[in-house]
Length: 234
View (cartoon, rainbow, N blue to C red):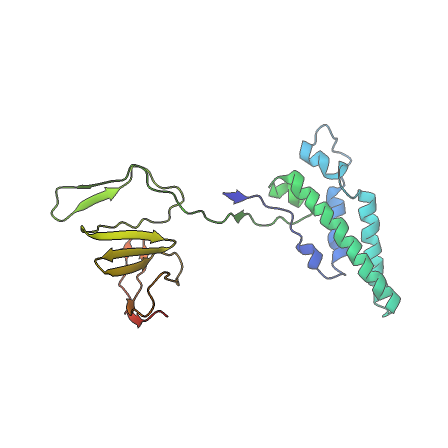
């Protein structure tokens, strides 16, 4: 799932002397050309200037006030510097409200956000959800000695890759978060499937030595296992 892009608020962090230029561009962009009538404009475009939370006349005055305050502050006068801070606060609020309004009517339309004089943010992905169980899983022999065919009729939505297991009688397998625990008799093997180059194995018994290694897997198969490291969990 994708999240709609928004009008970026990064302009709030720009230098005071840069803000008036950005603000004027927004004002110009939101001012409809005299040759475009409301009847021919799209509903969203028509709403750009008509329903602004801060009217264009007020945006213009606030933008001009900041430009004047920036110029006055160059004199080094303490009063002028204080006025500049107030002008920046007023400007950030007015153009921030305007950006939020444009985001609300744009509904992810990056081009409309640009036409309003703002910069669209990049679309963002929602956090990945854990995939569900395979549907109609089936395992059977295929006539080749020592071979088993295992799989599902349908792909699991959101799956990056699949991990298959073949356990002899008496062995059990448990999935605890990202850790796979295979137990045979009194001994357990702990495996972790991860898309990261580093992972953390949980629920290991304390004081028991383990030989730990890793192997990389891609669509071509798995590479060689790394040299194992002997570690004793606390």
